[in-house]
Image (tube, rainbow, N blue to C red; front, side, top):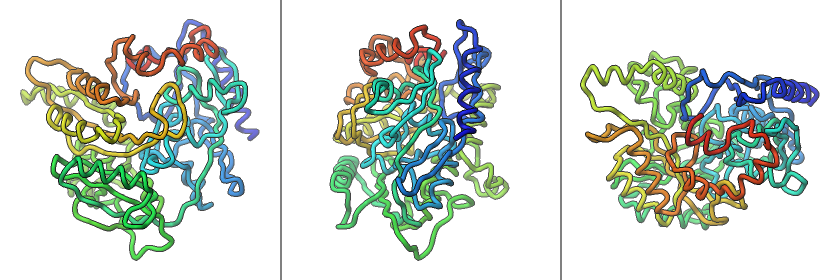
Length: 450
């Protein structure tokens, strides 16, 4: 904790030294955002390299004190030896705890345990006006505590968090249920989530994959003390492909938590990593989401793919990288729209339920939603311009009473944006903790991409 206090003082002094007319930005070794910006505009950087450790895991109280820039990979490595894990562990190893709380996160425990911020007991925050405050759900900074989720660093930065942990078992037994009809798949998923069981057995994890209109799967996970075997999807075998040809599978709990990271769900295929020859030559330490994310950043910076497409006379492609939440009762409608208008597959499906009131991402408390995640590029129709598909998706999500995560590109008009993301709740907190507007506001950062 003494090392943490030194790191807090360092970042506080660094923040104070930045000129008042310069917008501070947090310097991080990795990022899972897909809102690309011109780095030349981000000169006022705050170093977070001393705020990336697990301070303490307390098996007695089943809590952990964690610095804000700690990755979930490091956090899980600290908790699993105690037979514990965070209530929600987002899919990718380099997502940070602070990032998941301020930018939202989700995984296959979310049907019961909500989103990562719902298991946070206390946060130490560097606010926009340079103060260090400790916020929880009962104290004087409760307004900041409640508004912090989905604020994307526009109210401040999480320096330390105390989170609740849950007990785990060494293995996870997986069952992949096939469906040929989206409506039946949605009904089955809703029933499983609401009952918390399937075929008379409790369920600990629920997610699914849409491969096409007649090929959907729900994957159920259950903790187990023993396993007859364990599969390994960190080498030549690919997890998402196994869903289509296995009914039952077994993983260690650690490999289950990171089952999507090795191939960045399925996005590694864009780099040829799913071809057997390429995969056999690829070092295992490179088969992880942060490496692929760097490839994307380099391609974006130097325009390699765009130049190849022009040379081959291929149509211009639009990046469609989004996570959206739609009430599960309207999930089949969304899939029909998405398949007809966008046509990208596979699509990840993850049910979630918010267990509290979080004003900047106003999901109905206790209502089951389905997250759809889709990440790739789509050729633009002749005469259309970049943003065509993303705008279609935004409109469809709005029409289906859903919400869209803000980690990627957004196109909402200002007035509509503040209606969707509760500007009435945001601005009083913004004025209280960043009265001088040193940090960008949520619209400027997430829509205008400044």
